[in-house]
Image (cartoon, rainbow, N blue to C red):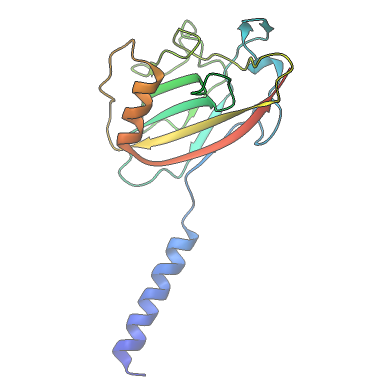
Length: 185
């Protein structure tokens, strides 16, 4: 095998090895384990539910190059609405932030970093809205997702719907990482 071909093959294999060993963008929570059942802390307080409505702590790592901000969404695809249910929409999280503490979804707490926006959920207000599926329905899935974005700010009105914010997230997304938890009553 000629030396140039051998060198080219070595460089290609090295590139594959580096790419394979690169850590993947990931999302975790010390509060919720993937595929676990949500606890009363993450259950809504209203609509017939009597939970504490506390957003879980979330932590993410290994964002892709070019990330300028993050967004977080919590979505229930099993809600009997025909379009699912948005439980939390957080955006304009600076790229330097890699975690949110438990309770950050309470808009009155002041825990969330300055400049970060919490969009209107399907409960009709901003901030975290916990799980509250209809009684007797199968357990619903709650998909927690962090989105790495290529823009510092999403250009949406303060009262934008979750669908509009979601559209802008998808238009500016570089990568996403998710985990799912369930809850039924």
